[in-house]
Image (tube, rainbow, N blue to C red; front, side):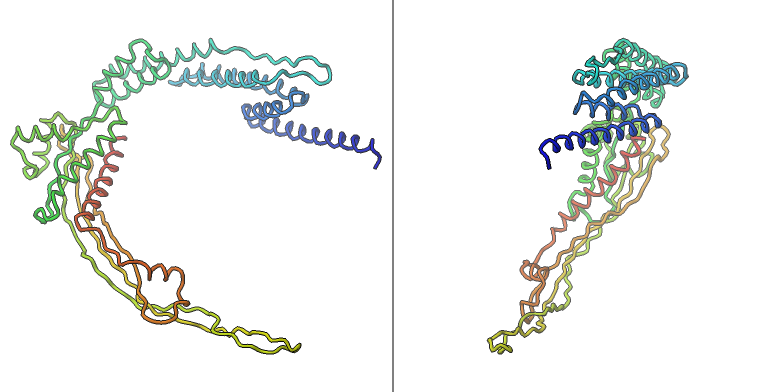
Length: 423
């Protein structure tokens, strides 16, 4: 090949590749524009120009696409402003913020010079700072006015919660907006739902055999609910200390809370809106038990080798294969605990049951090991070898298993109650 021919071919190839890439970019841009995906179209073009700022096709596409994007955004903003949607100013704020962000993305590009004329490519990018500021103020004002309206409608907890959330939304847009922080706190306090957890009653007839199971379950539920309530400004869990103080003053015991009436009375004294009551109905323990079964592994191995003389008179060895077997006894040890409970949430004001459920949580344990009886070890699989090497396992103590089951029971109850509280 002549020396001058290679650079020519290479240049032609590069031009062809560039044309091919520009064609794909133009087609993808048009496809995005047809779908209204202006942001994606601009981002693709900007990505191309970061790699090659002198790409004239990408330059032209950017100018046209930015103009189309701005026109579409302005039209959408006008439609939103004319609508009667409650959160329209928040939407307007979002649209102007998107415009500003996209404009800054384009401005971050290196200088774009037309490769043929040498002139700088001009792209008009308005500053939307004032529009963003105004729409944010309008959005905050809208939330504030809505909060005021909700707060005046009723002192009902749910209405006050709506009001508090509106004041909070205004503060999220503009911190320290008017007196929204004060009004938020006022409405939040009126919206708080106070929950008391009455000590669970042990009706399992185990006579303290497994410890203070009712106290363990109650304390666990209270601690979990308090941890959950930390993340919810409208829920307050009455502490165990407050509860015990009131019960002592009123000379009440857990066993004395035998019905909804006495539980509601306790809730009223505590100033609770709702009270969670419950009982441990049954504790079932299946003691440790071991069963075994005889099994056998087999495999094919080389039993021996025999020498022979091949046709060339050379001594050779021939492998004699056969099956080998190994018998072993496989043991499985089991134990289990199950705890049955029931719980209810009562409305202190009406005495009505809001949520009620009975559940049974099981905590089974099992483990397996093996011991060789006879045979060839070569027949054993890797899994069987591990079982043979394993020491005889022992389950956790009954009290440990019951404690774990009580925690699982508490988790189940807390998850159900938390789901109700977050409604």
